[in-house]
Image (cartoon, rainbow, N blue to C red; front, side):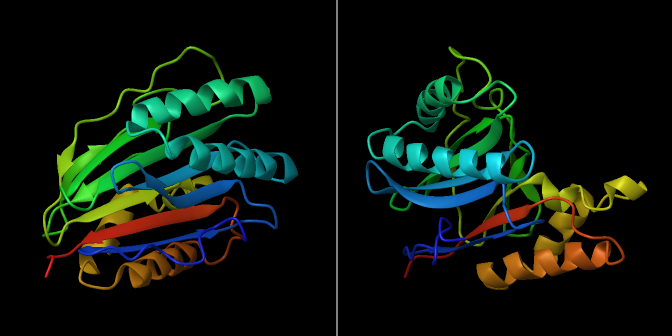
Length: 233
């Protein structure tokens, strides 16, 4: 837990919150906020394959490399490429992770992203409907060297829009019983609560997913990051 951000960054026009809810003592999920060149802010959500000590160590390792590389890397696709080259050397092919990285430019009010095999993120419009899907642009990290991770298109950010990043622990809860929580329920919850603070959406989404499968133990880590775009005074 000490590796996760204690507080979210405070930036004009942005309300940001994130949390990881482990399924066991050792968590293989990652979320982080970190500085990038040009006074930009990086957001990342990642999911290491498996649970326990090994995946947790890989998560901590990936976080350290990510933060270091991001200080001198403006392009998120290039950031993932460099991170992959390091992880391929340091890990076995069976030890891989998916990662969605976002670069927010608070002054230009834009978003750019790249995704290494990660579950889809979303940019929701002011009505809570999906405006853009932040889909995978490459394979998971740590598997094969020499792979590219193209950046998605740079997206403008308008007031009252919401950026949603997550791991599949939330959407897949209930899947073992043939009735997964799913992306539709997740998006519907965020739409219904889009006027709430970002931190309330994060906590409420977790509680809702938990209650959906109240009679079964949590079997996967759940992580979510919400970034609400507000009007700049």
